[in-house]
Structure formats: structure tokens, C-alpha cells
Amino acid sequence: MFHLELLTVGLIQGAMYAMMALGLTLIYGLLRILHIAHAALFTLGAYAGVLAANAGLGLLPAAIVAVAIGGIAGPLVYVAIYRPLLDKPPYVALIASIGLLIALEDGFRLVFGPYGLSFDNNPWFITGWMIGGIYLNAVQAAIAVTAILSIAAFTWFARRTRAGVAWRATVTDPAMARTFGVEPDRVRIMSFAIASMLAAVAGVLIGLLNNLVEPTMGSIIAYKGLAIIVLGGLGNVPGTLVAALLLGVAESFGQTYLDQVLDRDAIAFLVLIVVLMVRPQGLFGKAG
Amino acid sequence: MLDVTNMSCGYGAVLAVDDVTFQVPDGQMVALLGPNGAGKTSTVMAIAGHVEMFSGSIALGGRDLAGTGPAGRTRAGIGLVPEGRRIFGDLTVAENLLVGSYTRSRAEARDAEADALALFPRLRERYDQRAGSLSGGEQQMLAMARALVSRPSTLLVDELSLGLMPAVVHQCFEALAALKERGVSCLVVEQNTEVALRYADWVCVLAASKLIHSGPAAEVRGNPGFVETLLGLSVDRAGA
Ligand SMILES: Nc1ncnc2c1ncn2[C@@H]1O[C@H](COP(=O)(O)OP(=O)(O)OP(=O)(O)O)[C@@H](O)[C@H]1O
Ligand SMILES: [Mg+2]
Image (cartoon, rainbow over all chains, first blue to last red; front, top):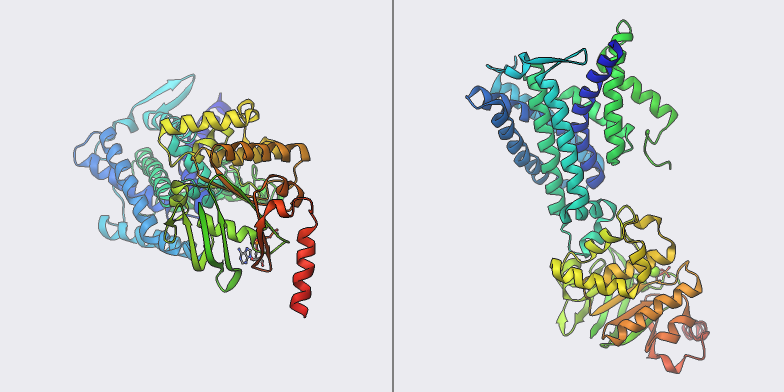
């Protein structure tokens, strides 16, 4: 029962990572940019959620506001920061991305204060159920449900819609997709919108889970997200989802059994280092 | 009618094609032959809008294509079957055709797809398979079908025969011949001179960025070695 509980908690954490890493891998697949500033959109979503909720909206409408803001802010980041750098070597965009993350984190600190904000009213935090001997609160349940729904929605979009197929074609061969009338810039804007909406909702959920929203809440997740997409085989969507879940579970078990030796956040990097020593192309990347 | 007039193109400071003039009349097949690195692919990709044109003009049906991007040229009636096929390997056959018809309305796309599948029934059998898992011949057929579903008036086909068995090559050329009957004209780049001469109406030969021959295919049909002869001659002339 104890192991089942660890597994459940790990999978829920992994589902959260999956929502973050999915966006990172989409953007990497399309632009070959490591979008570190993704974490700032996660934090932005969390602030939007907590401010909207504390202004009197219910949690669900507040989350929707946060997703909408993420969906606007992500494309703005692309248009303002990345698009002008597309012709430059990839490290230029990487540096810009790190700079943007730092600037936004400090922006949050200046505007909202360094100590963070809590939800005035967080019913999901205090509501919980015993399910099969495992205690889950409503935020954890919401993370699991949101992750499943958003990944299902994304899969439907990518497989079943014209825009989704065009997007996948653009990832494979942008010049050919463009020949047939798929506008690459529109595809990129769409990818940033989708990725940032996922990040924003993840931010709201983590804000609820910890009942705290603070300026640097995205930092660790940013670096873990990178570890996950490398493990998943850069740009590989299913690989990324599996790697996210594996990391969540590894952390949850590691935290229990390696508690004396390693801090939770170090486990991610231990896993990354070990996997890359054995399989430099990542768990699911193509060799060579 | 595709008109290429005094066209030079290339990559930055590299001149790949130098002052080339030829036409592809409606309902005709023109073969573009020449040794490796002559500038054949560059010519095709300049017509499709992917390689920068330095001077001259490219016009389709009397309309100048300068300033029109690749998608605009597809809308105007250019259909590209690029070197190396460049199908979307992670997408299914159906999805490749969907992308190919992106410039058309859904209804037009459905009709065009039915026509393309009638021309290449093999693709119907593979309809929901990953394109990357198809055989080389099937991939070439898919590349052609993907271009056809945009309803082009002129097809540009680069190195159709590369790596394919002779039977498949003939099947593909027969498809081009059938298209010609329907008024679709075609510019084919070929290493396989013999096959190209059998099907083409007109032959152009590029060597070292320049057009060194342009004439009816019937003149040279019995003589597949004519390109080598031509190259020998042109080298001699340059040396003299
Ligand atoms: N992307 C590129 N950048 C710079 N130069 C290029 C590029 N592509 C081709 N070239 C050069 O342009 C010239 C013509 O190349 P092109 O590919 O058009 O020849 P080709 O006739 O198609 O040859 P092949 O039979 O090998 O396909 C060559 O000298 C080649 O090196
Ligand atoms: Mg070529």
C-alpha cells in the first residue's frame, strides 16, 4: 500500500512535469530552441490564477483566466524575443531565453513582492478523499485530470485536425510544408500559445498544491523540464511524456529511500546524468 | 506555359545557374539533363521559389512569379516533387496528401485526392500507413501525388528515378504521360537519360551552370550517349 501511494504521488507529480515538458519539446521540435523562459509563463499563470481567485473569481474561472493570459503571453514572447533571433545561431536564443526568465522573475518580485502570494480561499487544498487507501486532495486530483485532458486534447489536435497535421508536417520539413501553403510563422505562434497555456495551467495547479505563488517557483521546474525533454529524446512527444512520468515516480521513491543522501531536486539530475551516460541520445531518442 | 528567361540563381555569393532560358509549353514534358552539380536542382528550386533568383525572370501562364513565395507559386499552379522526395515521413499517406492540398478548399482537396489515388492505386492500399514505412517507389508515388493534390498546371519532378527499380520508374513516367494527356505539363530532371528521352518532348542540357543544349527530344532519342558527347564537345570547345 505504501508503494502504491508513492507510485500515485509520483505519477501525479510526473503528470505535472508532462504538462510543462510537452510545451518545451514542442518548441524544441519546431525551432530547435531550448525555451528556458517557459518557466516564466508557468509562474505568470500562477500569479494570474492567484490574483484572479483572490479578486473573487472561483478557482475554475481563475484557472481559465490564467490559461487565457498564458495563451496570449506565449506568442508575444515568440514574436518579441525569438522571432528576431531565428537566423542567429541557437545559443543566441538560449541566452535570450535565460535573460528573459531572469528578467521576468525579477519583474514578478518587483510587482508582487518577494514573499509570494497565497490563495485567500483554497477549497481544493483542504478537500480530499481516501481512495483505495491513498489520501488525495482535490488539487492532486485536478492535476491528474487536467494532465490527462490536456494531453488527450493535444493528441486529438495533432492527429485529427488539419492545423495539427500541418503543424506536424512543419516539424518534419518546414520548407516543404511552406511550399504547400502551411505558414510556418502561424504554426510557431500556435505552438507557443498551446505550450504556454499548458504551462499556465500547470502554474495555477502548483500554486494551489503548495498554496503559494512566488517569483522563483518556475526555476527548478525549468531545469527539470530540460532534463525531461533530453531524456525523452528532444522533440519526441511520447518519449517526453513517458520521461516525465518516470521522473515523477523516481523522485517520489527516491525522496523516501534516498532521503538522507539526496535532495528531491537532485534526483532529477542524477537520473539525467545516469541515463545520458548509458544512452547519450536519451531514453527514446533515435541513435546517431 | 512556364517561361524561364535569362535566369540566374544561386546561394549567397555562389552562382549555381547562369543566364538560362527555356520554356515548358502546356501539355508537354521537358527533360532537364546534365552532370552532377550542373545546377538542375537549383533551377527547379528557383522555379518553386526556394532558391534566390539573381536576375532574369520566371513566369507561369504569362504571370511573373518574382516576389511570389513558395506557397503562392503552388497556388499559381506549380507542383513540386523535390529531389530526395522529402515526403513527411512521420505522417501517414493520407496526412501527406492533406498537407499537399492545403492551398485548396476541403471539397477541392477531396476531388483532387480521388484523382491522385486513381493514378496511384498503391497509395490507396497504404492510405493509413506511416509514409516513412513505404518502399522507395511508393514514396516517390506519394511525393508525386502530394504535388498533384494542389492541382498544378506544371509539375517539377527532380530525380524521379533515383534508387528505384526500372519497372517502378516506368510506372511513374507512365503516370506523368497520363497527366500530360490531361494538359499537365512537366519539367523532369533526370540522370537516367534513356528513360527521359523516351517520354520527353523537348530536352535541355545544363553543364557547369549553363544551358549547353536545347532541342526536340526526337532529334536525340536514338542516342542516349548524346549528353556525354555534348559534354566532350563543350570541353573541347572551351579548351580550343
Ligand atoms: N545550399 C547550397 N548552398 C551553396 N551551394 C549550393 C547549395 N546547393 C547547391 N549548391 C551548389 O550549386 C551548384 C549546383 O547544384 P545543384 O544541386 O543545382 O546541381 P544538380 O545539377 O542538381 O546536381 P545533382 O545531379 O548532383 O543533383 C553546385 O555547385 C552546388 O555545389
Ligand atoms: Mg540535383
